[in-house]
Length: 286
Figure 1 (cartoon, rainbow, N blue to C red):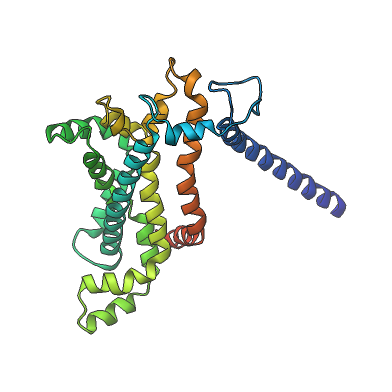
Figure 2: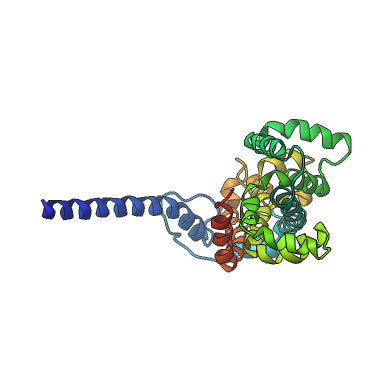
């Protein structure tokens, strides 16, 4: 019976690992294909070969050094970077402030406000896009990077739950001692809470940066004037997949996809330790 149990455990372990390996292959194969296709000498889609028959760096050179009416990657990259940076800064500040308020301050209606915020955050943002679009159109903020930054940042405070959970783990006695010494709430926030919240700040920064960096749906809705120089990378790359252009620009599209993934991958690798600490710490009392 003991031998049977050991054999059963080994079989279950093997099956689990085979299943996980299958999932890894399914996940990695499209990424690998996109990567190798970005070095293909054939500009269109080649489904007869996984690896290119001819290899070249021309697709990357076209992205950065040979802009045309279709490919204006340098401009798209800068537009996306500017939107992402400003959104990241504003969103991070809003999330940290709301999290501090909900975690460390006590005021009438606090629990009701938290419950309402959580319920509101459950609704997908796509449901409000049409209303948001016409509101921004009223103020002349459509086809505007400023309008996109405002919208990306406006609802950031609703994502306070994980950050609040992390701040809940910071001892209340520190804040109380500071208040006894005459410190204001702003001073407690900047001098005590923020220095102790580095992991969750990193988590918040990465999440805030990722949202506009890879967004397509809202960007496509907002930047609809047809002026290519105003587009973000997501819109520009999508435009290369049109029926009349996919056979000329698919390899260039793959190269653009590789390039846009590099900055956030580097950022995540560098900040991974803090990112994991932020998630685990924020889940304790979320």
